[in-house]
Image (cartoon, rainbow, N blue to C red; front, top):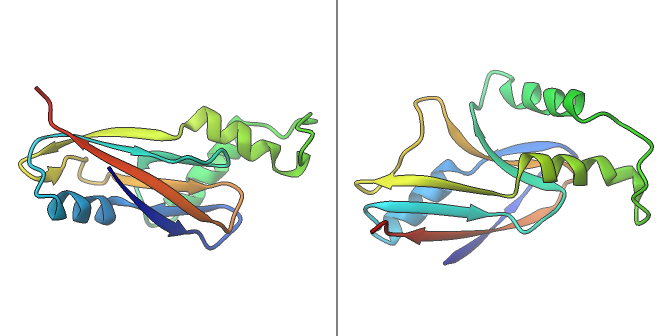
Length: 132
């Protein structure tokens, strides 16, 4: 297991984690199995998707349209209740294949941390497991 930190820069932000995961896989000389990434936060999320040419903003806009602003009952701080709902629906973990020492993602696919209530410092936990 390994942890690392990511500092987000905006209230809503998308950060590409793909190269960091590649470097962890290379450093560990991990060849074949699964890379599991977990984000222990409730107002950020993990997903895969395309990055660049405005797709990050498109993703955030779609999330805002899918998860409407309602009269949230979140007693602690209703202003960021939407972020908790979006984080739960999108998810806090990913499991990805590693084949021949390479994280296997699609041609245009990246591993993305989606910040929903930033800017903040986020911790990620990465586990590499051989498949038997």
